[in-house]
Length: 338
Length: 185
Image 1 (cartoon, one colour):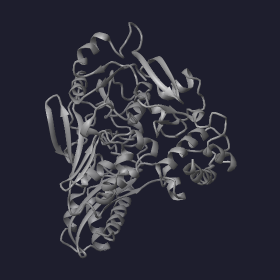
Image 2 (cartoon, rainbow over the protein chains, first blue to last red):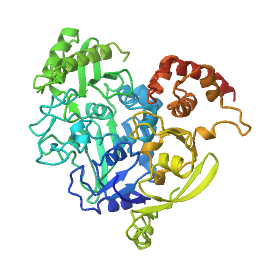
Image 3 (spheres, rainbow over the protein chains, first blue to last red):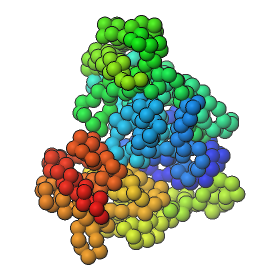
Image 4 (tube, helix red, strand yellow):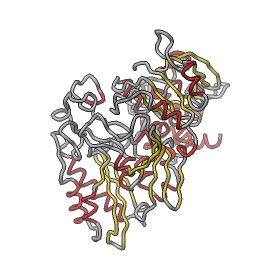
């Protein structure tokens, strides 16, 4: 690990000021100043000499809404400094947004969920080994213009949706799939002030793989809002892995249904483990809306979700696995008590 | 409880002036860190890069906590910060705010083993023993969290502690034994 300056921020303005101080390029790897909360991925990548910040700004002393979960009639507020474990066990989330609780509970390990925060979780980096390990020279995400060793390399876990010619890294997270499915919004404070925007806008595509989000240097995620909606309670997160626990998704599906008897009044679908970024399956949603839900229709919608899949060697199994995961999630969700 | 100079408000200016947590001339940035471990307070001057795991083992001589992967994948370095089980390898010493408990701190002062330690012995819940301190620290927290009420939960909520000797069935049995005893205590 390279030497760095360690600072503690006592409030949001000072955190933002310190965070913007490095004149960072915006490239997620080369940011000279990084916020640290849980640190579970940042320190991991610093030990690998992948991330090389000159300054860490510890934000664990920030108080107020960033530490709160607020559940009310208008929806849910999830503070960015809430630990994954606490949100996963929150009674209102378990009852009214089961998809969120499951996405959190099925991620990482109990220790990591005790450490990692919700804000940091959505910013986790890909598990692509060619990215993580800097001894590989070709990685457009780590070193723009250097190429992509994964294209024709070991790419069993890589993305098939939303990929580009420069990068096929998978977005590994679970919680972000629940947020993108449930029309969540991100709230931030930055050098240019506070703003909020659709969570779907947070992550960028693979055009410039080294820039992963729209966040400006020093812009801090303060929390997320999830609107209350008739589909939130009948929702689930189904995660398919190489082993039963403590593994990243090979494929996952976040599904929420608003049913009128057996007819789909409305539906929300996101797909994990298969895409470059958190991935909303709008095509599949459109095919299911207004229709009775049965396995044949679910299968057709799932095929539509993967119609534009671009497998690349060892991940050729992913479209089929992803389709089956989505069909199973839809049928399980339909069987839930509303 | 690190003594890095806080930034923010009126402190922002002085943070620069006092050079808190930053480099001494020619030296990597370092700072004063206060830690309470197993009830005992320590004040140390540490390179900012030093993890809680390395402080425990290399500075405080508490080698019960083990370094396995050093990347948060194996659970061998599990300790408690406050009541929470965390991975000491992915925690900077400077980040620690609450008292830390390690495997050396769970037995009674008179040497009576913690019910979880005794249960691991009773059930032969290890072979090589390298993962055992992490397993026990994780298991104690798992019971306190209420995530050890049945075998399925135990397996799920203990999945962050790998045992390459595969003593898993015995570990589950040990936790089953210790759970009611812990509740009594």
